[in-house]
Image (cartoon, rainbow, N blue to C red; front, side, top):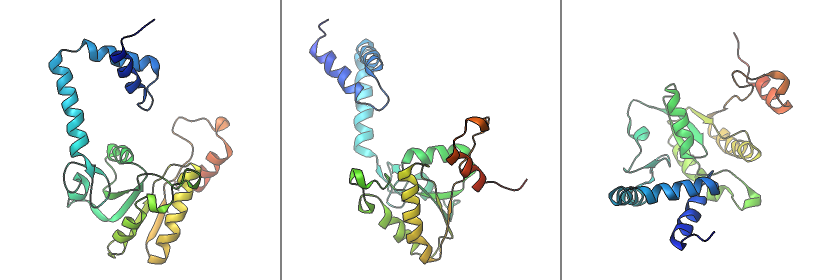
Amino acid sequence: MDIALPLTKLIEQFARFPGVGKKSAQRLAFYILDLPDEKVKELAKVILEAKNTIHRCKICGNLTDSENCTVCSNKDRDFGTICVVEDPRDIIAFERTKEYNGVYHVLHGLLSPLDGIGPDKLTVKELLTRISTGTVNEVIMATNPTVEGEATAIYISNLLKPLGVKVTRLAYGIPVGGNLEYADEITLLRALDGRSEL
């Protein structure tokens, strides 16, 4: 079936989005075409506005439309504790818990030599600069438990330990509602390592 070229292009653009397959891209494209013109213009304006105004926080690397993000601007936060994350989306996950009161540092990626991503492509230097102020007591490594996440956590930990900063790692293990018989060896090992007293 021949599809009009502008519609094909729109579907192709939506299909480039992470997690969006061909069928979902088609649904989104047809949804856009069914919208009134003013709604399409509003959507296009919001996309351009976000693209043109959102940038990295000068302190932590989180995304913001101000000089500093809302976390770094909040004087009630514990600036002595820094949670190091891979991506700004990870901050959203932590903030949903409403339990963490420290601040963050976004690496904007993980070490991956095979992909050409070394420490110079991440915000490691900026983290070291923050630590050098002497006001940081603890750095929590909150990278994902993947090969790249573990390598990044170990690399940064080795850089920070000589600076006299306590470096901790998130505990990983059995999820709530999980079944032990289906857990792999690494997950069980992490669960044992991260056990706590009852």
